[in-house]
Image 1 (cartoon, helix red, strand yellow):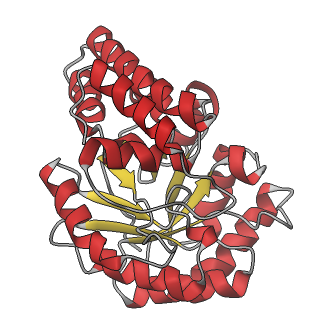
Image 2 (image 1 turned 180 degrees about the horizontal axis):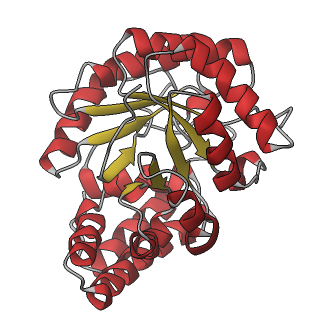
Length: 305
C-alpha cells in the first residue's frame, strides 16, 4: 500500500457558514483559489478549526465533497473523519475514499478514550477496514482529546498491523522529544507538525511537513520559515518564527487563548474571505475585539480588510 508522501505546508480549513449557521459551500471554491495563489497545495478538511465535530454527518460529507471538487486548486485533500461513534467514523471514511480523498484522518473516541497504544491500534484497524485503499492518519491533539499516549510506540505497533497507516498529525509541543522519536520509527511515514508555535523547532528536528492554521492567512511567514531552514539559516528562521508568534499573540489576546474563533476571525481580517460564524459553544469575537485585532495586525504591517 502506497503511503501519502507530502512535504511542506498544509492548512486546516475553516468551515464556511452563513450568518444563520447553515453551510455556505459556495465559499469553498474562492477559498481554494486563495490558497492556490498563496502556494498552498494541501488541505486538512473538517478538523479542529474546521469544526468537524460540530457538524452532522451529512454536513461533513458535503464539505468534504466541496473541497474534493477543488483538487485543481489544492491537489492534496485529507479528510478528517473522527467522531465519538465508530460507525459514523467508518461511514465518513468510506465516503471520503469513494470520492477520492488523498487520505483519511481520525482523532480517537474522546468519550471512551483508548487507555493504551494497543487499544488505539485496534481502533485504527477498524477505521482502516472502511477505507482499505486510502492512506490513514492518526490526529494526535491531546490538548483537545486528553489522549496523550506515546506516539512513537503507537506508530511502531501500528505500521505492523494497519497497512494503510501513513503517519500522524503531531499537535504537541514536544517536537524535540516524542516528536523526534516518531520521525525515527519509519522513514516512509509522514509526521505533520501541528502547532504553528513550534514550526521552526519542528523543522530543526527533521520534520518536513506541517498542518498549520496560520497558513490560511499569513502563509508567507510559514513558507519563509521552511525556505530559511532549507537554506540552513536557522537564525533567520527563528526571527520569522518570532513574527508568527507575535501575530498569533495579537489574535489570542482577544479570543481568550487558542481557539477556532480567533483564528477564523483572523482569516477574515487578513484575507477578506467571509467564512461566517463559529458554532456554539465556541463564541465568535465581538465586533470590538475584531476591531482590536485588525488595528494591532495593521500596526505590524499586515494588510487588513
